[in-house]
Length: 316
Image (cartoon, rainbow, N blue to C red):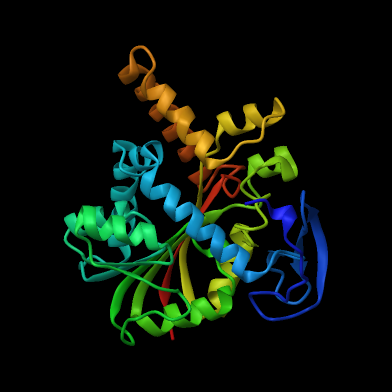
């Protein structure tokens, strides 16, 4: 699905609806701009909404049939990562209640939450993803949009939106709907790529994560994400950033175009390498060290990991 086969259109800021913007970074197609009013980052001009939604359906189909991607989603490392996220959430809300995972994909995180004692619900736009989560894992999931959640007002104790907000057509409208469904004092957990990461600074538009103008159309730094959440009525409890991908940096500097499928296949090669347990343990050790460096309050690179994580409480 080539982006350059579709016309581009200028769009308003998805955070505040302002049309005033300044150029930030040229992409292969279109550009990242910064809103002059709220200081949020987004792609403009970009392809039409229906092209973006069609791309999401395409990846949902790939997720549900690609054995490599399925293995990655349900790998031991990902399960441990999900457990760590739930442990952090429990620090802010010790009692397990109703949890909604928005953009639940195949249901890997949702399954872990269910096993940890949450009454877990999931929603995703991807038809194939929902079929997989429902038929293969027997999870409580529905197909639908974040802008029209099929749940009652103030019915959820926790809402998670991991690697979703960068895809949203209107983050402003989506946050209103999240606020409607989340209980007062409920917890919101968000993750998204970091526009201010070491990888992005090193590679510029060469980092495929930000140079995906038909997928990642709203971008964030730690500062801009926290400001957006505060404006949406949430009290930010903590933020951190997480790791970098040496593989991505190395391959990109060699002139290769990297995407998530290639990264997945690279990880599979590592698992199939001689002495995989030793290789895997070394990799996990390096990853944990990098994550600790980027997460430390005293680290000079604290806000420059590849992923932003934010935890917030609904205030109003």
